[in-house]
Length: 244
Image (cartoon, rainbow, N blue to C red):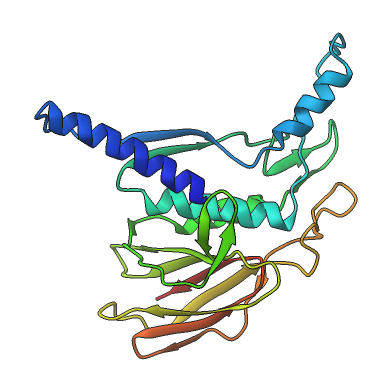
């Protein structure tokens, strides 16, 4: 998600730079197509094993997604929402079976992968006005991106009702993260829903045999007092909190 945000900001800066040089009033918005978590190296290895094998209707790129993948996926969703002023279309690749949040068996059942849930939460409740959320968070060192915040977060306000939905990811693999959200001037007095996707096993995933191994569960401990929301994010988690 850090890489995605940097990429979006660099492309926007390039567009605006050219617009300024041309003295153009046109603002170019972006379509982010296609995005997802994809184990591309795994696919390349499979193709290398059978370079001349051309079966009919083969299973292709049927990645199995873990809790870790869902947290990464959720952080990508947040990255796109945080840039909704310029990213006006963002197409997930794909939807069913192929690197997808929904899996099926021919003539059999269908089940939700872990990545289904952040996508469903954002699709249902990430509608309205994306708020300009400024994150102040502890960081951790990375080899490629330097110091990266443990917290990735955004919030969306419904202009009709004033309700606010907070989406947050704790990137820490082993530590809970205290979160305080300032809500001054928003007249919010009720926590409508607090949902968390996390698991003690970061590699836990849903399969044909265990389709509901990983599902969102009700969060605990969120407190809305005055003009602030306080909650502790579970390690390696995706969290949605809806306020009214």
